[in-house]
Structures are given as structure tokens and as C-alpha cells.
Length: 308
Image 1 (cartoon, rainbow, N blue to C red):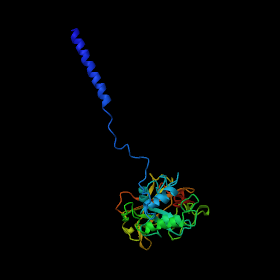
Image 2 (image 1 turned 45 degrees about the vertical axis):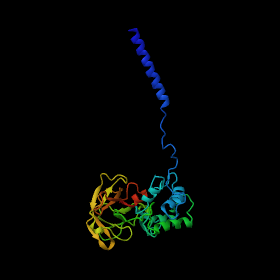
Image 3 (image 1 turned 60 degrees about the horizontal axis):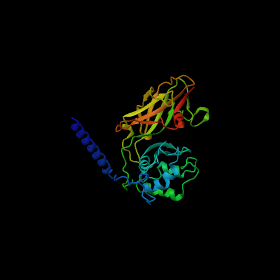
Image 4 (image 1 turned 120 degrees about the vertical axis):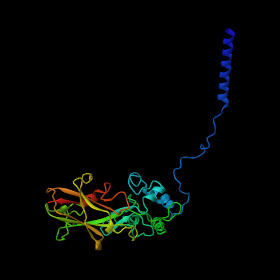
């Protein structure tokens, strides 16, 4: 028994020594990815064409627009990457009114259409709306590069020219009238043009809202065929979950506008009523809403009325 025990111990010792030596001789395999430099996060060529989206990103968007709290993903357009710059610019719907109220813009950039691209308006305007907003305007050559890219059809990273998608329709404005077609929305609280307009309690009101389904002058769906054309009313400018709904029933073809009639303004005097307009061309799962939750406050108060 003693010998068997000694033999067993000896065998265990040999096994232990073999395992230790095996561990020492078994070197860790080489990781083929160790030599890759992961510090670079950009796919921008070293010297991209300044008239390309890669060149615009490298020379303008990433260094002059992608600043903390400004186009850094906080709000659109998103200039953090080439891809996000492209996807939040080309054919991206907006509802923008110039400070002088002279023009409405519906899209940030429209391929082959510099004049109707909101981005160019922001770069060239003589007002305080210019971009970048840091007090240093882009040079004329920088602006020319942006225009050249748009005039080339807004090609993507691979040089593929943008193709117009089936975009959601847009709401481009509204006007309010009494039943005698006297305009109401021009009479604003305290005379401020972005304050709620004034409406008498118990009176009837007509609201006409202008809609489009176009990016470059070619209408995708005639607005008269829209499946949704509604006005929602709420006492909270940011919460329309329990809003009352008014459906527009008359299409005014000369103005591309839908007309909704509110038989009586039944809210108490002193109340501010906010409204949003919803449309759908029948080809999208979500309705177009304007103003949206993320719209600036001046749009929310512009689309509202004060009950007298």
C-alpha cells in the first residue's frame, strides 16, 4: 500500500510538472488587429475634392459648424460625420420663414436647386440668421464649394447623384378668417407679429392651411388627394395628446390650401389656444405635423390664438 501511494504521488507530480511546462511553452497567439490604429474616426480622404460632400465635411461642416451645442448631434443638420451631414441635408424637409417674411423654404438642400435650398439662404443671408453663428462668416470660396456640390446634384460619398425620394408632404403656412373673409391672423396680441392672433369668444372662424408635396417643383401627390388634413387644438403648446380635432373639408385649388371651419370658439376669454396642422399624402405611416414638438417656440405661438 505504501508503494502504491508513493507511485501515485510520483505520477501526480509528473503530471503537474508537465502542465506547468505546457503553460510556459504555449505562447499567446498574435492578434492580427493589434497593428490597426483605432484612433482615427473619419473616413475622409486626405485631400478630398472641396466640391464634394467629403470636402465640405472636412473643410467646413466638421471644423466650422460641428461645435459644442451647435450641429454636434444636439439638433439637425448633424455635422458629426460625413454620413450624418449628407442624410440630414439632402431633401430633408424644413419649414423655414426668412426674418423678413419674404420667403418660405421647405428643404435644407435640393439637388440642382441652389435658390430653394435653405442651407444656401443660411450661408448668404445678410440678416442675423447666417451660419455659422459664431460671428465668422464663410468665405466666398467656401460658399461656392457648397453651391457647386448642390448644382452637381448633391452626390454622396460614392459620387452617386441624389434621387428624389417620396417625401412626406409639407405645411407651408396658414391664414385665419371670420365668416365674412376678414383676415384674423394679422391682428396679434400686443401687436407682436409672432404672438397669438385675436379671436372673439363664441365667434366662428375659418382656417386655411397651405400644403405641398414637392421638392423641386414636381408634385408627387396632388394636395387635394391627401388622406389626412386636420387641425388639432390644445391649451398646452407642447402636449397634443388630448387635443380636439377639426377636419378640413374644402380644398381651395387656386391656393393649394385646405379650409377648415370652426363653428364657434368655445374656449373661455383669456385663453391661449395652440394648434397644429396634420397632413398625409397616403404614402407614409406617420402624418406630417407642424409645428412639431421640437419646433422653435415662435412657431408654436405664431400657430395660436388668444380668445377675447
